[in-house]
Length: 235
Image 1 (tube, rainbow, N blue to C red):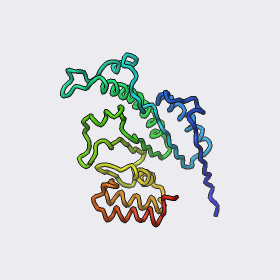
Image 2: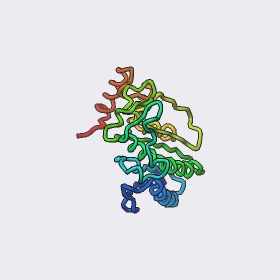
Image 3: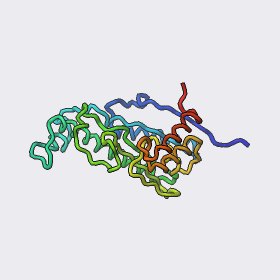
Image 4: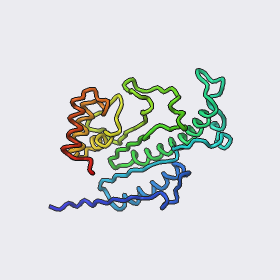
């Protein structure tokens, strides 16, 4: 029996749409709106998966403060700041980072409204792949992280939202990024292959942790299964 499902796979380059390293997240959202509208027309009610990479928040974060908009045009944590003042270098990097974050927040708000207000069942997952470096100075800053985290320098952000109630709730003290794929599939209600089925089981057994899983027998069994039996790595 033949399926009527049409599978399309597109890889779109930012330069094709006039985007560059300096483009704002708002510029990217305008391009997304065009692509999203075109793809919906092309596929109708069939499932649509889109992955989008934003780069404006990436370093370096060294634009002089005088060139920033208020209130990011001056040190945000000056010498009299309590409980702890930050030096000029950290103030420069943080002002740059927070200024761009302001733009990212507006872009994400637009994206959420576009997708989650749709009548199409939608899952939205967005995350940061690493902390900013600030040329290594980020490691010197104190951080507030979940107690279960062993190294605060490897913590980043993720958020998963949907415009419908998933079959069950998911709550972890932390989530290793390697489990993001199976989590998205579970929330979307998409059938998993052998790899993602094992990945989801590992996620549940180890409460969101991977290499830091407290049950080393489960970790060893999982790695033996995916690397040796499934052969997910190839020469």
